[in-house]
Image (cartoon, rainbow, N blue to C red; front, side, top):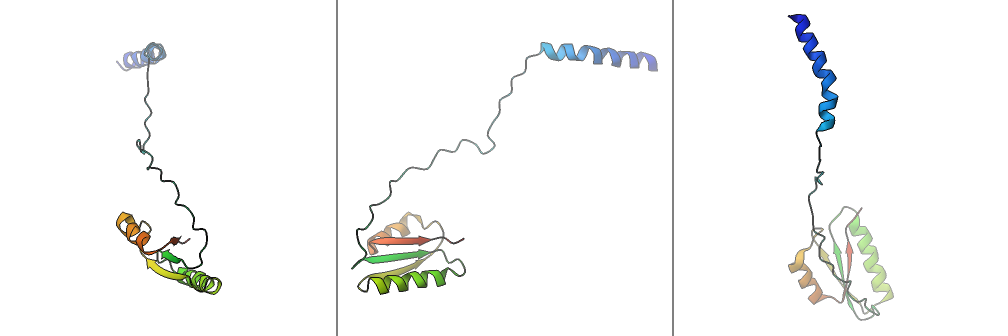
Length: 116
């Protein structure tokens, strides 16, 4: 009985390549990230021609040590453009439409810092 089973197994193994060649296989490869549409494109805003007499917003996400950098930037702006006003903002990386709309109403241009 053992020899019969061994013989059948050898027979199947010998026939297997021919059976596999006869079957046509089609694979569909999917992106594991899915189909993600690109975000809408917004053209950059026009640059201000000069900072003299303007209000400059400084937006910072609160990353450690960033306050030293923005303090230095603010100091340089005040030295170079004495009649320029600076307004400081702090919040998350994505400030959102509501906060962005508020900031746009208050300043002429924005310096945005995210850290790292």
